[in-house]
Length: 131
Image: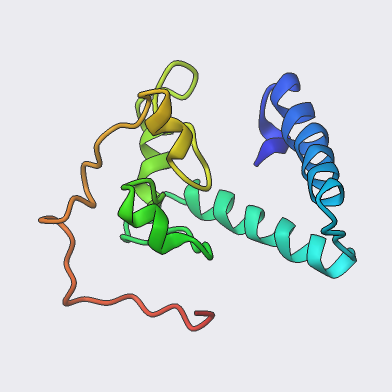
């Protein structure tokens, strides 16, 4: 999705962030090989694609720390980033694409409309065989 962003965002998301991530891992002694880097990249692609899909299903972006994000009310549901585009994407809210941690810190998190707890239908389950 970063390929369709503004020039500044493209450079940041496609060059700067991966290089800083690699440098951070390397500086603490965690060297990522090709396959580890590939899995990390696929996670980001999956999170971005599902966040831009517009699907009306209450799904939380998978993460090894989802339980912690849920405790802090910082997990990202599909609807969160969808609202960002639905109500104006340049000066909007819900900027996060993997979590809402930064949105909570900078007070740019918007309440959910469709996937509020009383709106979620837990009887009709959508099965995703990959999980």
